[in-house]
Amino acid sequence: MTYVRKEVIGPHTLYLGDCREILPTLGKVGAVVTDPPYGDDAHAGGHRVLSIIGTRRRDRIAAPLSFAPMSDELMQYVADYSAENCNGWALAFCQVEMVGQWRASFECAGARWARGMVWVKPDSSPQLSGDRPAQGVESIALAWCGIGRSKWNGGGKRGVFIMSKHDQGMGHGGAKNEHETQKPVKLMVELIELFTNRSNTILDPFMGSGTTLVACQKLGRVGIGIEIEPKYFDIACRRVEEAMRQPDLFVETPAKPEQLSLMEAAE
Image (tube, rainbow, N blue to C red; front, side, top):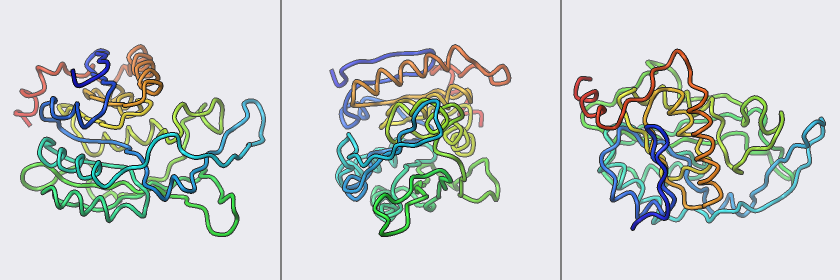
């Protein structure tokens, strides 16, 4: 068995295990949208901003990230898998300093590099040491893994996304996020809407607390997620189940996996 646990929630499949063991067992996917571990630099100076519920005061603490940093080997593995098995776009969040490494990895794998996009975080943490400016942006490496000319749903829109770190009622506005690098659902919805179509299966090999799959559910896409930490896997399962119970009346239910090949062929 290549996974510790597998949960099927509606049209979505969630795996608990190491993505390097699970990815070879999966079929083709329409897109890879993921937030992999940060590199060594972020771990050396990692910190979080914690909010106190019901107050206006923020307690800022310096704390190391709880997960291991992204290795060059793992980065290349994900790029290789995407280039061979993804029929569309591959998006990977990363530090600004790692954009060049992702580009080299994707190009080495045979994918076509597009560019590094930017997520601007107006509510990002200040620089606790005070000796240099705080980091207020995060990059998104973008590569085309499909056949022929690349295409997306954004026309001439810029690859710049200005959005708070937390969804309404979360983080600074309420309970803290359930993963230390959790992305807002609003941001993931926008990215998936721009870079995928309803017929696509979306793969997130570093699922974390499941935000990518929650966004898939909201947009009528099928999601596949892989997470190595049991704690976050359980959180992801719960969040996807909650999203299933709160459907958008204006969005069609995600197609079943067996219907997807027919839909993709018709596009």
